[in-house]
Amino acid sequence: MAAIFRMSKSSNLASSICRAFTTASASASAGSLSPRPQWVFLGCPGVGKGTYASRLSNLLGVPHIATGDLVRHELSSDGPLSKQLAEIVNQGKLVSDEIIISLLSKRLEVGEAKGEIGFILDGFPRTIRQAEILEGVTDIGLVVNLKLPEQALIEKCLGRRICSQCGKNYNVAEINIKGENGKPGIYMAPLTPPPQCASKLITRGDDTEAVVKERLRVYQEMSQPLEDFYRTRGKLLEFDLPGGIPESWPKLLEALNLDECEEQLSAAA
Ligand SMILES: [Zn+2]
Image (cartoon, rainbow, N blue to C red; front, top):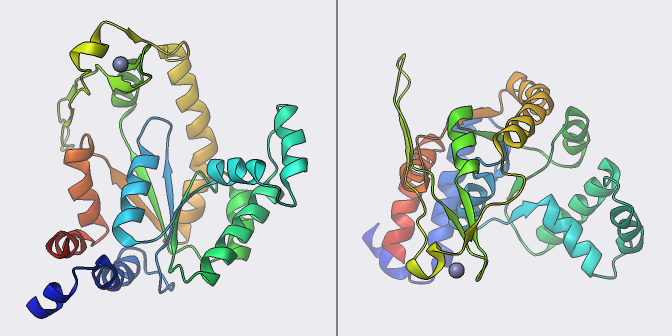
């Protein structure tokens, strides 16, 4: 093994070692039939879904495909759907499932042709209908549902600050929820601004408790049937975040049987 690590200065080998783990992990966690990581990340607004999906995609060497990015990419290109999309977006309408699926299929085809070995989807599917259409396009092996208690999500959203000068994001909330009824507590450190930003912090207008609660309610209503859809197929991995990134990342890797994978990658780096 040591010889392999010495050879793997280029991260390619390391990520193929990692892929072997990924395969084992996907089947162990979800009884999946798919030999590659074809995963979906679910989670309510503010949970940090994009952050974890992006970190995991870097670790596994698979693309992090966010549907919002697909739409923006198509709009900025002169692809076949760009005109139609521009009209929809300019009229403030929602982009249809058919268009999203068409963009996604195209993206997956291009990826496959380039030799991509899987993907992590973020922001899709959102409804059972979309999940059903997706089943016709590709095999999803695992659906990771990231969760935080409502109290933590609200505090986190209310703690968001933006520097009015440089535009950087901070969070002044220090979340410390005591564990109870056998549930572990949650600690999330604040993301404190440096002195040059501290006096220029502003709050986004829609980060009020009422707005955050409504956003969560709408999300729950929409996502519950989708979670059930994947639960009954044995594909849903529920993951309660134990805190911020430093606390959650190692636990998430453990839950995905990827903890050894990260050790190997850092040994190879
Ligand atoms: Zn600043």
